[in-house]
Length: 312
Image (cartoon, rainbow, N blue to C red; front, side, top):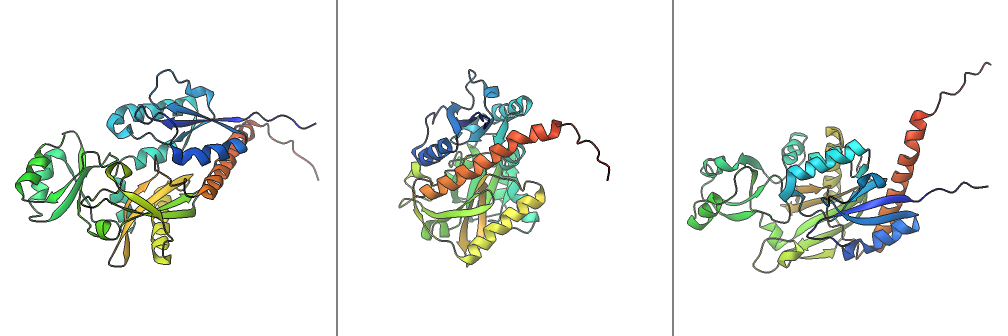
Protein backbone atom coordinates (compact mmCIF):
# COMPACT_ATOMS: atom_id res chain seq x y z
CA UNK A 1 0.00 0.00 0.00
CA UNK A 2 1.30 3.48 -0.87
CA UNK A 3 1.30 5.94 2.05
CA UNK A 4 -0.67 9.12 1.49
CA UNK A 5 1.57 12.17 1.31
CA UNK A 6 -0.07 15.35 2.55
CA UNK A 7 -0.07 18.31 0.19
CA UNK A 8 2.43 21.04 0.92
CA UNK A 9 0.91 24.37 1.96
CA UNK A 10 2.55 27.39 0.38
CA UNK A 11 1.76 30.99 1.33
CA UNK A 12 1.95 33.43 -1.59
CA UNK A 13 2.97 36.66 0.14
CA UNK A 14 1.35 39.85 -1.16
CA UNK A 15 0.81 43.42 0.13
CA UNK A 16 -2.21 45.45 1.16
CA UNK A 17 -1.72 47.53 -1.99
CA UNK A 18 -1.72 44.36 -4.15
CA UNK A 19 -3.60 41.80 -2.03
CA UNK A 20 -4.83 39.57 -4.83
CA UNK A 21 -2.86 37.25 -7.03
CA UNK A 22 -1.25 39.07 -9.95
CA UNK A 23 -2.45 37.82 -13.35
CA UNK A 24 1.19 37.28 -14.29
CA UNK A 25 1.45 34.63 -11.53
CA UNK A 26 -1.71 32.72 -12.54
CA UNK A 27 0.16 30.11 -14.61
CA UNK A 28 2.56 29.56 -11.70
CA UNK A 29 -0.22 28.93 -9.18
CA UNK A 30 -1.98 26.53 -11.55
CA UNK A 31 1.28 24.64 -12.09
CA UNK A 32 1.91 24.46 -8.34
CA UNK A 33 -1.51 22.87 -7.85
CA UNK A 34 -0.62 20.21 -10.42
CA UNK A 35 2.36 19.33 -8.24
CA UNK A 36 0.10 18.83 -5.22
CA UNK A 37 1.03 22.16 -3.63
CA UNK A 38 -1.77 24.18 -2.02
CA UNK A 39 -1.04 27.89 -2.57
CA UNK A 40 -2.82 30.48 -0.41
CA UNK A 41 -2.54 34.22 -0.97
CA UNK A 42 -1.70 36.12 2.26
CA UNK A 43 -0.80 39.76 2.91
CA UNK A 44 2.63 39.73 4.50
CA UNK A 45 1.83 42.11 7.38
CA UNK A 46 -1.71 40.88 8.10
CA UNK A 47 -1.70 40.25 11.88
CA UNK A 48 -4.40 37.57 11.54
CA UNK A 49 -2.33 35.22 9.39
CA UNK A 50 -1.00 32.15 11.18
CA UNK A 51 2.24 31.61 9.29
CA UNK A 52 3.04 28.45 11.22
CA UNK A 53 0.38 26.59 9.22
CA UNK A 54 2.51 26.86 6.06
CA UNK A 55 5.44 24.79 4.92
CA UNK A 56 6.94 27.79 3.16
CA UNK A 57 6.30 31.40 2.15
CA UNK A 58 6.90 32.45 -1.46
CA UNK A 59 7.53 36.19 -1.79
CA UNK A 60 5.55 37.71 -4.63
CA UNK A 61 3.84 41.10 -4.69
CA UNK A 62 5.16 42.43 -1.37
CA UNK A 63 5.63 45.70 -3.20
CA UNK A 64 5.52 47.91 -0.10
CA UNK A 65 8.14 46.21 2.08
CA UNK A 66 10.64 49.05 1.59
CA UNK A 67 8.11 51.55 2.95
CA UNK A 68 7.75 49.44 6.11
CA UNK A 69 11.29 48.15 6.27
CA UNK A 70 11.73 47.65 10.05
CA UNK A 71 8.40 45.78 10.19
CA UNK A 72 9.45 43.71 7.20
CA UNK A 73 12.71 42.66 8.81
CA UNK A 74 10.83 41.80 12.00
CA UNK A 75 8.44 39.65 9.97
CA UNK A 76 11.36 37.74 8.48
CA UNK A 77 12.71 37.23 12.00
CA UNK A 78 9.31 35.88 13.04
CA UNK A 79 9.20 33.40 10.16
CA UNK A 80 12.69 32.22 11.10
CA UNK A 81 11.61 31.74 14.71
CA UNK A 82 8.61 29.71 13.56
CA UNK A 83 10.81 27.56 11.37
CA UNK A 84 8.87 28.52 8.24
CA UNK A 85 10.98 28.41 5.08
CA UNK A 86 11.05 31.55 2.97
CA UNK A 87 11.56 31.46 -0.80
CA UNK A 88 14.05 32.94 -1.40
CA UNK A 89 15.98 32.24 1.79
CA UNK A 90 15.56 34.91 4.47
CA UNK A 91 19.31 35.58 4.65
CA UNK A 92 19.40 36.22 0.92
CA UNK A 93 16.31 38.44 1.15
CA UNK A 94 17.88 40.58 3.88
CA UNK A 95 21.08 40.95 1.87
CA UNK A 96 19.23 41.81 -1.33
CA UNK A 97 16.86 44.26 0.34
CA UNK A 98 19.56 46.95 0.68
CA UNK A 99 21.27 48.06 -2.51
CA UNK A 100 24.56 48.49 -0.72
CA UNK A 101 25.02 44.99 -2.17
CA UNK A 102 25.88 46.65 -5.51
CA UNK A 103 29.12 47.94 -4.01
CA UNK A 104 29.87 44.43 -2.74
CA UNK A 105 29.30 43.02 -6.23
CA UNK A 106 31.67 45.62 -7.66
CA UNK A 107 34.35 44.54 -5.18
CA UNK A 108 33.93 41.03 -6.58
CA UNK A 109 34.61 42.26 -10.11
CA UNK A 110 31.03 42.62 -11.34
CA UNK A 111 30.45 45.41 -13.85
CA UNK A 112 27.77 47.68 -12.39
CA UNK A 113 26.55 51.15 -13.22
CA UNK A 114 29.04 53.40 -11.39
CA UNK A 115 27.54 53.91 -7.94
CA UNK A 116 28.22 56.05 -4.91
CA UNK A 117 26.26 55.95 -1.64
CA UNK A 118 25.62 58.75 0.81
CA UNK A 119 23.24 59.47 3.70
CA UNK A 120 20.56 62.04 2.92
CA UNK A 121 22.41 64.70 4.89
CA UNK A 122 25.57 64.25 2.82
CA UNK A 123 23.99 64.28 -0.62
CA UNK A 124 24.67 67.94 -1.36
CA UNK A 125 28.32 67.53 -0.43
CA UNK A 126 28.64 64.53 -2.74
CA UNK A 127 26.78 66.23 -5.58
CA UNK A 128 29.02 69.28 -5.28
CA UNK A 129 31.82 67.06 -6.64
CA UNK A 130 29.68 66.25 -9.71
CA UNK A 131 28.86 69.64 -11.26
CA UNK A 132 26.56 69.65 -14.30
CA UNK A 133 26.32 65.83 -14.33
CA UNK A 134 23.01 64.17 -15.16
CA UNK A 135 22.37 61.75 -12.30
CA UNK A 136 19.81 59.43 -10.72
CA UNK A 137 19.29 59.33 -6.95
CA UNK A 138 17.29 56.66 -5.10
CA UNK A 139 17.24 55.11 -1.63
CA UNK A 140 19.32 52.01 -1.06
CA UNK A 141 16.13 50.37 0.28
CA UNK A 142 13.47 51.08 -2.32
CA UNK A 143 11.45 49.83 -5.25
CA UNK A 144 9.17 51.03 -8.00
CA UNK A 145 11.02 54.37 -8.40
CA UNK A 146 10.09 55.30 -4.80
CA UNK A 147 11.80 58.61 -3.82
CA UNK A 148 13.77 58.46 -7.06
CA UNK A 149 15.05 61.64 -8.69
CA UNK A 150 16.86 62.33 -11.90
CA UNK A 151 18.21 65.60 -13.14
CA UNK A 152 21.26 67.76 -13.65
CA UNK A 153 23.41 68.72 -10.69
CA UNK A 154 23.39 72.48 -10.19
CA UNK A 155 19.99 73.13 -11.72
CA UNK A 156 17.80 74.90 -9.18
CA UNK A 157 14.74 72.64 -9.48
CA UNK A 158 16.82 69.47 -9.09
CA UNK A 159 18.82 70.82 -6.17
CA UNK A 160 15.57 71.81 -4.45
CA UNK A 161 14.14 68.32 -5.02
CA UNK A 162 17.25 66.80 -3.42
CA UNK A 163 16.69 69.00 -0.37
CA UNK A 164 13.18 67.56 -0.02
CA UNK A 165 14.27 63.91 0.02
CA UNK A 166 13.42 62.26 3.35
CA UNK A 167 16.08 61.88 6.00
CA UNK A 168 16.97 58.61 7.63
CA UNK A 169 17.89 56.93 4.34
CA UNK A 170 21.07 56.18 2.47
CA UNK A 171 20.89 57.04 -1.22
CA UNK A 172 22.50 55.68 -4.36
CA UNK A 173 23.91 58.28 -6.71
CA UNK A 174 24.49 57.05 -10.26
CA UNK A 175 25.03 58.67 -13.66
CA UNK A 176 21.90 58.72 -15.76
CA UNK A 177 22.24 56.03 -18.43
CA UNK A 178 20.77 57.31 -21.67
CA UNK A 179 20.76 53.79 -23.15
CA UNK A 180 17.82 52.89 -20.89
CA UNK A 181 15.72 55.37 -22.87
CA UNK A 182 17.22 54.75 -26.29
CA UNK A 183 17.77 50.98 -26.16
CA UNK A 184 15.89 49.68 -23.12
CA UNK A 185 16.61 47.87 -19.85
CA UNK A 186 17.20 44.12 -19.86
CA UNK A 187 15.69 41.64 -17.41
CA UNK A 188 17.01 38.08 -17.40
CA UNK A 189 15.04 35.51 -15.38
CA UNK A 190 16.64 32.51 -13.66
CA UNK A 191 14.92 29.68 -11.79
CA UNK A 192 17.00 27.34 -9.66
CA UNK A 193 20.14 28.94 -11.07
CA UNK A 194 19.20 28.16 -14.67
CA UNK A 195 18.46 30.87 -17.22
CA UNK A 196 14.80 30.80 -18.27
CA UNK A 197 13.85 33.79 -20.41
CA UNK A 198 14.44 37.49 -20.90
CA UNK A 199 12.57 40.68 -21.69
CA UNK A 200 13.62 44.16 -22.65
CA UNK A 201 11.77 46.99 -20.94
CA UNK A 202 11.33 50.47 -22.35
CA UNK A 203 9.95 53.64 -20.78
CA UNK A 204 7.05 55.59 -22.18
CA UNK A 205 7.87 58.52 -24.42
CA UNK A 206 9.26 61.39 -22.38
CA UNK A 207 9.92 59.24 -19.30
CA UNK A 208 12.91 57.28 -18.03
CA UNK A 209 11.11 54.79 -15.74
CA UNK A 210 10.43 51.37 -17.23
CA UNK A 211 7.86 50.19 -14.67
CA UNK A 212 4.40 49.45 -16.04
CA UNK A 213 2.70 51.86 -13.64
CA UNK A 214 4.58 54.68 -15.39
CA UNK A 215 3.65 53.50 -18.87
CA UNK A 216 6.68 51.29 -19.46
CA UNK A 217 6.46 48.23 -21.68
CA UNK A 218 8.23 44.87 -21.95
CA UNK A 219 8.75 42.45 -24.80
CA UNK A 220 10.40 39.02 -25.00
CA UNK A 221 13.94 39.01 -26.32
CA UNK A 222 16.87 36.61 -26.57
CA UNK A 223 20.02 37.94 -24.87
CA UNK A 224 23.36 37.77 -26.60
CA UNK A 225 25.99 35.34 -25.38
CA UNK A 226 27.97 38.21 -23.84
CA UNK A 227 24.94 39.57 -21.97
CA UNK A 228 24.08 36.14 -20.65
CA UNK A 229 27.69 35.57 -19.59
CA UNK A 230 27.72 38.89 -17.72
CA UNK A 231 24.55 37.93 -15.84
CA UNK A 232 26.06 34.53 -15.02
CA UNK A 233 29.18 36.24 -13.64
CA UNK A 234 27.04 38.41 -11.39
CA UNK A 235 25.29 35.34 -9.96
CA UNK A 236 28.65 33.62 -9.49
CA UNK A 237 29.74 36.64 -7.44
CA UNK A 238 26.59 36.34 -5.32
CA UNK A 239 27.52 32.72 -4.66
CA UNK A 240 31.06 33.73 -3.74
CA UNK A 241 29.64 36.25 -1.26
CA UNK A 242 27.72 33.38 0.37
CA UNK A 243 24.28 33.36 -1.26
CA UNK A 244 24.53 30.66 -3.88
CA UNK A 245 21.13 29.05 -3.40
CA UNK A 246 18.25 30.97 -4.95
CA UNK A 247 14.95 29.72 -6.31
CA UNK A 248 14.50 32.74 -8.54
CA UNK A 249 16.33 35.89 -9.52
CA UNK A 250 15.83 38.61 -12.07
CA UNK A 251 19.02 40.21 -13.33
CA UNK A 252 18.40 43.78 -14.48
CA UNK A 253 20.95 45.63 -16.55
CA UNK A 254 21.70 47.81 -19.53
CA UNK A 255 24.12 47.48 -22.43
CA UNK A 256 26.52 50.43 -22.62
CA UNK A 257 29.19 50.56 -25.32
CA UNK A 258 28.71 46.84 -25.87
CA UNK A 259 29.09 45.97 -22.19
CA UNK A 260 26.27 44.67 -19.97
CA UNK A 261 26.19 46.64 -16.70
CA UNK A 262 24.23 45.34 -13.72
CA UNK A 263 21.57 47.72 -12.42
CA UNK A 264 19.97 45.43 -9.82
CA UNK A 265 19.57 41.81 -8.83
CA UNK A 266 15.91 41.28 -7.91
CA UNK A 267 15.69 38.37 -5.46
CA UNK A 268 12.72 39.41 -3.31
CA UNK A 269 9.57 40.29 -5.25
CA UNK A 270 10.40 40.68 -8.94
CA UNK A 271 7.79 40.71 -11.65
CA UNK A 272 8.68 37.47 -13.42
CA UNK A 273 7.08 38.01 -16.85
CA UNK A 274 5.47 34.57 -16.73
CA UNK A 275 2.28 35.57 -18.53
CA UNK A 276 4.05 35.40 -21.89
CA UNK A 277 6.05 32.33 -20.86
CA UNK A 278 3.67 29.64 -19.51
CA UNK A 279 6.36 26.99 -19.93
CA UNK A 280 8.66 29.00 -17.66
CA UNK A 281 5.93 29.02 -15.01
CA UNK A 282 5.83 25.24 -15.22
CA UNK A 283 9.60 24.95 -14.84
CA UNK A 284 9.56 27.29 -11.86
CA UNK A 285 6.73 25.32 -10.23
CA UNK A 286 8.67 22.09 -10.72
CA UNK A 287 11.73 23.61 -9.07
CA UNK A 288 9.63 24.81 -6.13
CA UNK A 289 8.05 21.37 -5.78
CA UNK A 290 11.49 19.74 -5.70
CA UNK A 291 12.70 22.29 -3.16
CA UNK A 292 9.71 21.73 -0.90
CA UNK A 293 10.07 17.96 -1.18
CA UNK A 294 13.70 18.22 -0.17
CA UNK A 295 12.70 20.33 2.83
CA UNK A 296 10.11 17.68 3.75
CA UNK A 297 12.75 15.00 4.29
CA UNK A 298 15.65 17.03 5.65
CA UNK A 299 14.28 17.23 9.24
CA UNK A 300 13.62 13.46 9.22
CA UNK A 301 17.12 12.73 7.96
CA UNK A 302 18.64 15.02 10.60
CA UNK A 303 16.69 13.36 13.41
CA UNK A 304 16.94 9.76 12.22
CA UNK A 305 18.76 7.37 14.58
CA UNK A 306 22.20 6.25 13.44
CA UNK A 307 22.37 3.05 11.44
CA UNK A 308 23.59 0.08 13.47
CA UNK A 309 27.18 -0.87 12.94
CA UNK A 310 27.77 -3.90 10.77
CA UNK A 311 30.53 -6.41 10.98
CA UNK A 312 32.23 -7.80 7.94
